[in-house]
Image (cartoon, rainbow, N blue to C red):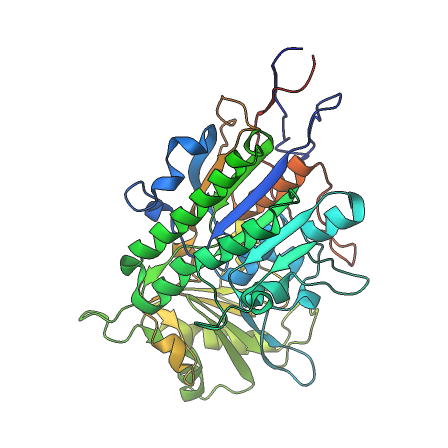
Length: 450
């Protein structure tokens, strides 16, 4: 027997893994999502455990791109499916329900995901694999819950609600509490796929602004270090791949002398102009505008297109607006497909118009006092830049193959699927879904024979 470097090429085009032959131990994948961590904030001074020797070998340390909009719900679903929002249907944290009763609804229920998650694919194709999730946000337990005859939850899932942790802000646990729960859940049974959400950075950045989140970043770093130490102590590091990333960055929306009112109530501007039959879903740095006359699955806006063109002209006059886009063709308004084909946001749950805020601004509904009090928020393209670190003893010593462009959250999801040896998630209706491209990683196992 001798040590054998196994280069597992994760195809950038087809996403097919060249699996090692023989009785090689399977790779165990740990996805750690540090909620709200922008790329430049992942620095040695405040997050030392992301840079110390215990993480070696590190095969990839780069900047990646979150999916749009840069909100918690769509990015977690993308990271754990490898699909863009137009495929999985989670187009933000909120949307306007176009059904007969209508209304503004949160996009945080498993039944609303229109494609399989990785938990579902693993359970239906490789049920012998063990999946574990520890989510510091209670709502993520709802998003990745089970739906009969449709969606599978992780084998073990911990949230603040299930763990009896007292709610601090909309049922959020500390990073230490979340890591405590994860390590306890995996002490006896090693997971094949683990997903961990750490949200202190996000919570602190909302309440106090991203510049005040250094302590929260240190807490996240400590939590990651505890995971790494546990993998080493239990002899699991050599067969593990650890992917550390985020769901979005953060923007400072604290009022300034030049920007005394950073909160934009877009619905008030539209109502003041006399437009009727329109609805606004404010989603941080992006607002979705819906025409009530547009029905679900419509392929054109029909007569509503002229109204939407008029509303687009109103939106452009609002201070703090930098871009107005149309989901389907509207005279004089760039379409999503033309302006940002990589966003993958043409699902019907997205607004008929998508209005983007300038840095330092956020969209807020008039009645939403909590969001108006935020000193930091996210949702616009300015918060797409996130860190990505790929490390673990199962990796070879060489670097990952260089990508021509920064990897995306969808690429991370597809990389996980390929490492686990499972197929890509699919839409439940059989329709097409744009997926990420697996990142080319080199795996190393000292236990395999040539």
